[in-house]
Length: 206
Image (cartoon, rainbow, N blue to C red):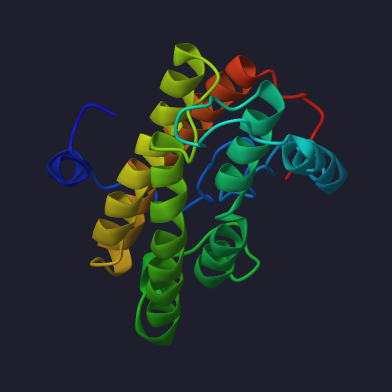
């Protein structure tokens, strides 16, 4: 996304005021309709973490790159961390329905949505930063670039969500449809690219 999120506001046109759930990264239980495709099963994650724990370090964590298995486990742990907060935001916005109208995004419902946004931002910021600056180097420059791109997009998402939280009614839905959804889809594309570089199994989920 080349524009700053707020610059979208100057280009929005009157249009549909229902909002589809926002698309998130492939690994994450996101906010898009239809449902998310998840990669890593809990069993797969536990197996990889077992590999991580069994690998005895031979030098400081700051200088020894992660193995391929460690990188997979680390990435999955960070990319999946926001799942509960994403689900909470979905529930607050849509309340089990596919769409929401501008007149509904006020009062108690809007307060609950804003609380869910604040919670998601608290989770996303450390998760994104952890992908940009991991506890140990990524296995290769290509891996560092791909995962760093995801991390930076997630950190940027916290700013997108902060702007969303200042809006209500029609302005909330316009910003959701025209800024939040496209940025979330960008995270999804970057996540797919990172998964390919990490050689993540396509059948696993969080």
